[in-house]
Length: 306
Image (cartoon, rainbow, N blue to C red; front, side, top):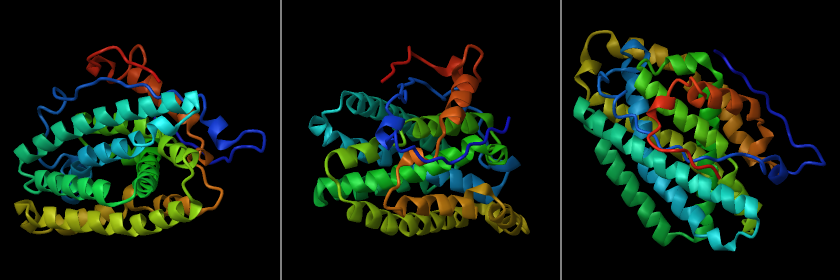
């Protein structure tokens, strides 16, 4: 199934906030413990080295990254008057809490498999973001959250809309975890942005925060993956690294389209809903959580919707 989406801007009669006003942001209580029980070490793309380490290192920053997002948005919760946005904030917090929990469990599994740097990356991410929460102005933390939410929404849209990208996960348990995460990132992609605007965040801070984060995050992740790969004995087997590097260079994850969509955030009139993903979301809600959904049986409690 290859579901595609097109980018459309809200019409003059429909503001970005109106365009997202009916977005459902349900908290799905779910567990991937059983599907990940048989996870092999090099799970991605039928044993690919670098792609496996890339997925593992992305997962390593999620638990405490999600906690940072929640803190940044929750700080302004009492200043939001719009009842729809208040409900969406509640849904955002619920979804991000579940993402953090499941990625932390996945990171524990990676550690068991021999990814020696994953838990260290978790700790470093936590310390850095806890320091930023205390040291930086609250509006700066919210601007960073809005920028990073555009990162996750862009990657989510790529994953949900590109069959080849989904196939690179290799293992169904990891694929389904990232698909669930991607679906929910796309569902709440505008929440932090709308809170930032609602509390009077400036355009200058918004844009310059992304201009700093965009290359900074890319470089940080590249270095993190490099170190992780070099600690893996498989990297020193003849031809393995060269083959894996070729696979990475042709991967949708590093395509120019991803970078263009990330840079779109710099536009003065940008809003996350400029990229209309409503049909994509509906298709994936049904595919994953419909009556015969692929992972409906992993839900551990009734879903609460915001």
